[in-house]
Length: 185
Image (cartoon, rainbow, N blue to C red; front, side, top):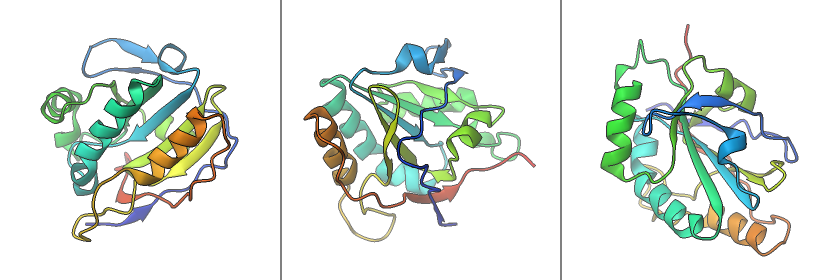
């Protein structure tokens, strides 16, 4: 299992816009349609990564807790599906339903969106405030497959709590770690 760290987009970076197919609804959705005026969480994930599978329940719990407070969650898979067919859009829809994603699970076939965000791994997390400026990028929490640490979402919860309280994010911003994005050769 390869361990790749986030590239850590510079804070203050404006969220690159996108328009991608949602594998759950079948609709093409844009960042402008999905964004929240409070906070928008963008996650690069995929079906097969053991790091994503390890935190799936934590991601679902985080989204359920914060969507009630007006935070939007968006998941994107950018993996090469020719060499990693388990990440294909039809299987993304099945995985989203199995795990219980209540948020869009978008497919970035060209990988242009992952490149625009400088995403490096799955999972890779970004939080943007209401004006879509990056205020957090990094890990969900310290849990990794095999390290025995509980999946709490504490790092992202601290950041979201500060944003929702109108305070600047002071939460530690530790790079996420996971499998590298499977780039098209």
